[in-house]
Length: 317
Image (cartoon, rainbow, N blue to C red; front, side, top):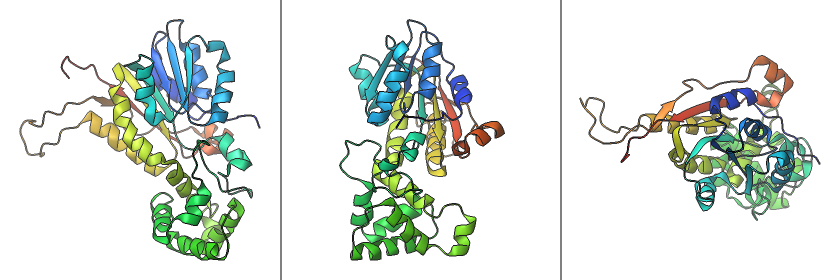
């Protein structure tokens, strides 16, 4: 199956990066290289691009798509949480821009055997990095009921999380749940019919929750963002596209904290904590796809782009 993924908020993201021809740019979620290709097109012979992805299919597809730029593009199979170490290993300590396009790609959703979608019956997989041993099936069949309830409630934001978790545990006591179709049927039985009619596909939230848990998506984002901001050079920008409220909340909070890290009580006349701003939030409100893009690509509907710019740091800071 060909790796196809329609890049969301493409123009807005490239504009947000403000690509300098001789700059160094990193895409931590390379995918099919849609955003990456546009960055490489803007780079001169002295510019450099580093693309990171943990999915082997993405690495192969991106390598082919960026073949004309192999003299300036480096492609690495890794998780973006290791970005700083991967860059340092290649002698790079500061970059001019970073891009993250979070969530699951169209290719991963459409490739049935990867087990990300509830629309066909396939093995319960959902691994973004297929070198990982744990699968979605291990979570569904191995987690205690209270843990299943927690992830479906917190990561899926599903009000029927308790019922879904209870029914998963009851079903697997009869026989292991091995396919997406089996899991989808259990979820359907857990949600009242009148609610199913109004709220989109009943399995969407639970599948999202299991995928986030399996791939540690929120932990990786939360634990990596400060370090990525730190490796931005003066005036460097980080652009992050999120697809659900949990990711967006993390990005919004960490961007704001880096803009205003002061921990002094608000009634203090002067700051004494010594924490200095690392830059400014460019997007007070997230940039959303236009009507035209949402009609052409329905998966873009929940996308939000936020941008942070590193300020010029004085010596000793």
